[in-house]
Image (cartoon, rainbow, N blue to C red):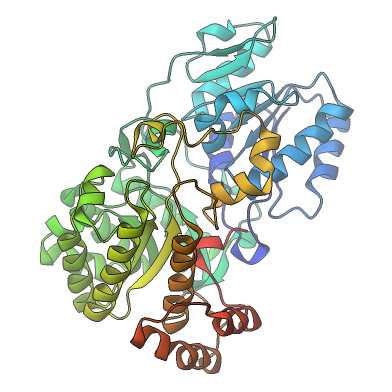
Length: 487
C-alpha cells in the first residue's frame, strides 16, 4: 500500500480539496492500493497513519508539504513514523522540498524529495523501491545515497493536466470539502494549469516548476466542474492557478463553457493579460461568474517593478482597477513592500499608490506583505547577497524567525528598519479596517461599520501610527485576514 498524506494546513472552515495528493492518487488509481490521509479533515491523522501502517503492508509514505504550518505538521508526523517504523520510506513532495531540497534531505526522517511535478516521479520511485529501477535515473528526484550524500537528479520536463487522469473524487468525502465562502454555500477548488512562465525575482514558483505554464483544456475543466456541480451540488469554486488568464482565445472558450454551470468563482490573474483582453472577453468573464480576481500588483514604483522583473507597470494596474469596476468584478491587489534596494522609498510610493487605487475603485481589496527573498535568484537580487543565510535544516525553518519569514508575517529582514516595518504593518491595519474584506462572511454590518468608523479619520489624514484601537477591534470581531488565513 502507498500512503498519501496531506498534513494540516488550515483551519477547518477554510478546508479545500487536497489537490496535490489527489493528483498523485489519480495516477495510482487502478494500479496500486493506496489511502489518502488529510490532516485538515482527520482529527488525529497520526493515529490514522499508524493504524494503516499496522494493518497493511505499506511500502511508502508520500507527504505533500507547503512552507509554514503544513511543514510543521509534516515534521511532527514524520518524526513519529520514523521513530515507530524506522525502515518505512518517507518521501516529501510539493513546494517546500522543490525549493528547499537540501534542507529537506538533511532531516533524518525524510528519505526522498520529489521536485516539481510529482506524478511520474512517484510511479518511478515506487518501482525503484521495489528494485525495478535505478534511483539515479529518476528525473525530479533528490535522495540520500548509501553514504548519506545528497543526490539531485536532473529536472523532469513538465506535462499538462490533460496528460494525467482526473482526480478520483469518489475516494474522498467530497461534501466535507465544499465549504461556505463569499463565492458560494458549497465552494470547492480546482487547478486548471501548472507552472508559471514569468521570472519575478521575489517568487519561487519558477524555482519549483520551471518557467512554463501548461494549461488544462477548457473541455476538461468544464467536465470536472460539471461533475462536481451535478453530483455534489458545488456552487462556487476557487481556481488555484498561478495565472488563470494566459491566452485570450483559451479564456474565451473556457468562459463560454463555464457560464451554463452558474458558478461564482475566484482566481489569480496577470495585470498585463487583463489589460490586453478586449471588452467583449471581459464581459464573458463576468457572465461566466467571475466574482474576484487576485493580482500581484507588488509595488507602487515602476522602478521597483522593473527590478522585480514583474513585467507590468503601475499604469496597467490602475487601468485594470478601472475596467473591473465597470464590470463589478472585485480586484484583489497584493503588494510585497520593503524592496531591499530602497525599502523606505518603496514603502512610501506603494502606500500612495494604494490610495490612488482606492480612489479609482473603492471595492478593490488590498493585501500588504513584506518583501521576502527566495533562494538562488533571491540572493542575486537587490544587493541582498550575504545579508540573508537560508536555513539548512527543517528545525531551523520551524523556528519563529523563519516560520514568520515563510508566511510573510512580520519577518525580520536586515535591510528593513523597524520604523519602516511598523509603517507597513500599521498601514495594512488601517486600510484593512477602512475596507474590511468582503470574503469575511461572518462579519456583520455592525462590525464592519465599527471598523470603518474607527479607521476613517486615520485613512483620511494619513496618520497610521500605533493603531492599537483597530487591532483590538479586529481581534474582538475576529476579522478575517486573507494574508494569514491558513495559519
